[in-house]
Image (cartoon, rainbow, N blue to C red; front, side):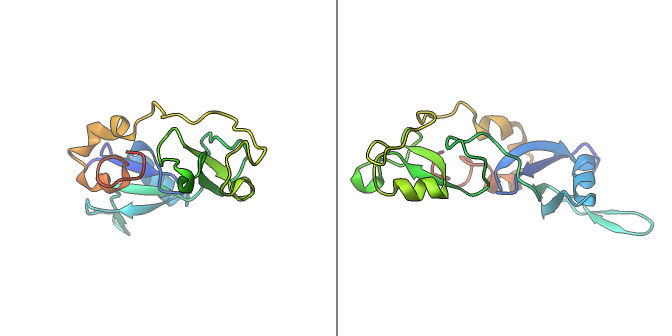
Length: 157
């Protein structure tokens, strides 16, 4: 159980962010910047304390990633450009992130009907969680439930 073991780092909203080593994970947890979500590796014993060896940690704070709405908020929702009740699909080309006030204003209308404009047309991103974390999945079986497209349908797999 060395300090080079990989640890999955989740954003505050449980979105996979990256992989770090056990030593870095210990520092994040010790400084109160992260919490241990999974500990499938046992414990590290020092002369005065016992520490969990994390497999998955979650950041206490949210790392902002660019979203389609354009507003700086932690409170984002998914919005269907063409509402589902009007035949719109739940796919990359019809779903955008929007703040709650914008989503509420648009309601069950199209952006044109609501006199709103998208900052970007929706598209399927080139970033792939599976591609980013695949090298670790064989040896880190417990991570699968946190990586979209590996164990559950996150709506966009």
